[in-house]
Length: 96
Image 1 (cartoon, rainbow, N blue to C red):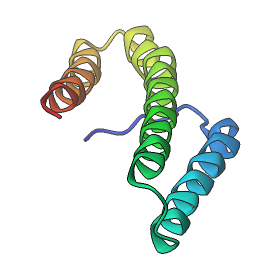
Image 2: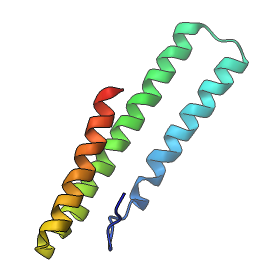
Image 3: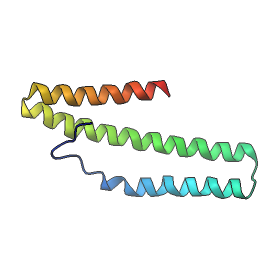
Image 4: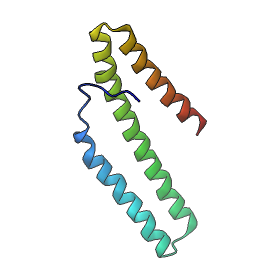
């Protein structure tokens, strides 16, 4: 995958990542403690939702920064590279 010369800053998302990490640790603890299946599944669903939200924020930042910068560069090649990256990611996501 091609990189942005000046990519979006994702450091603002670290607290969100920390929360997801805490959720995953909580799920592991629930499994270790043999909690009720549906309670574990509920927490897994919440963690997946939190990851999906993070994914969308990062994607929005990529489009708003990397793709926009490629467009501003005027380079048809760079624009196509960035568009193809996003399309490939979306195609992979739709298969899961």
